[in-house]
Structures are given as C-alpha cells and as structure tokens.
Image 1 (spheres, rainbow over the protein chains, first blue to last red):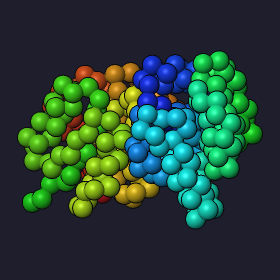
Image 2 (tube, chains in turn orange, blue):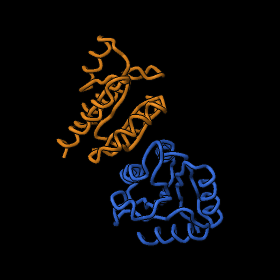
Image 3 (cartoon, each protein chain N blue to C red):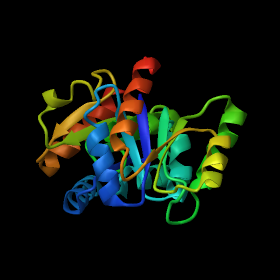
Image 4 (cartoon, chains in turn red, brown):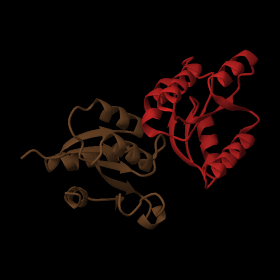
Length: 126
Length: 124
C-alpha cells in the first residue's frame, strides 16, 4: 500500500517516515512540506493513503481534505486519509471527518498507533 | 537532428549539475529538478516531449520509483534510467526488470551518455 505524507516539520516527517518504512506492507512514495504542494502532487502520484494534519502552517489542512473529497466524488476513487495532528479542537475534527478523514492520531503520543493502523490497513488492502 | 529531451532528477546538487552538463555536452535537451515534486511540476508545465527520466532511486521527497510510475501515467512512452549509490541487487523490488535500468554511482560522463543512449534505443 502506497502512502503519501503531508508534514511541514522536517523532523516530524523524518520521525514518521522512519517508522512507516519499517513496515514491509507500506511504501512511502512522497512527502509534501505544505498543503499546496500536496494538492498539486497527490493527484499525480495517486497514493492509496494520505497522512496529513488539519493544522498545516499555511492554513490549508482542511483545503486538502476538500480537494481529495471532490476528487473522490468525481472519479469515484481517491486515497484514504488519516489525520496526524496536534489539534484537539472537536469542531475541526468533526469537519475533517465529514470531509473523509477516517481516523485521527495525536502527533505527540500516538505515532505507534498510527503506524499500526497503517499496517492493518495495508494487510486488508492486499 | 533534434536530440531527445532528458529530465534529470537528483537531490545532490553537485551530482545533478554533473549529469546535466554531461548530457548537454552530447547534445540532449536537459530539464532538471532537485526532487520529485519539482520534477512533476516541471513535466506538467513542459509543452514538448520528455523522452527519458534519469532519476535517483532514493530521494527524500518522492521516491524515484514512484516518480517514474507517475510520469509514465502522464507521459506514456517515457523511458526511465535510475541511478543509485547502492548496488543494483539491493533494489530487486524497486526496479522491475522490464521497466527500468540502473546506472550505479559514481559514474563517468561517458558512461552516463552511453547508458542513456542504450535506454533510448532499447525502447525504439
């Protein structure tokens, strides 16, 4: 299963990639440093799964979810989306889930859970 | 005779400049990018054909293989030559035999030019 990560912090991205790359069922195919880059590149790379934050520095975290949802509606396909975020705002979370994010993981405490979720998803992906 | 257009993708600046110079010296039109995101955007904007992608296999933003697969969807017929500092047998899973060639680093200008020509001619 191919994975694309959207993360503005190089240190956090490296930490997550290091963990994801230990999972044989996962292939990290790209990392975007901001949402605008992700919006341009994700449709071309066509990952199975996107890991992103709704609180990206350029304020466009939810914009990415809107774009991915629109693509799913038009093309009847699109990547699954997981949130890896420090944002605890329940309203924002509800919006993100309404836009198709299927799970949320806390950046500071739940990287193991995120990686395990991805592993399980990859096994089901086949 | 118009020579082909080569896209060079390499995150190490010195290596990239070396490759670009080598290919320009033998007459190719060369596009260059420091990483896969830049390469994708460059190809999307480029109005003419891109005949061959010469890319590092292991890069920080977009893997060479993912880049090649994405560009093959956008530009069917584009040939691919990978490069890496790892030995070729380290990438048996990343480089399907029918769809990719590898040039191991470090390489000389002549070797690069020869390999590029071989890949271009191999697919006709």
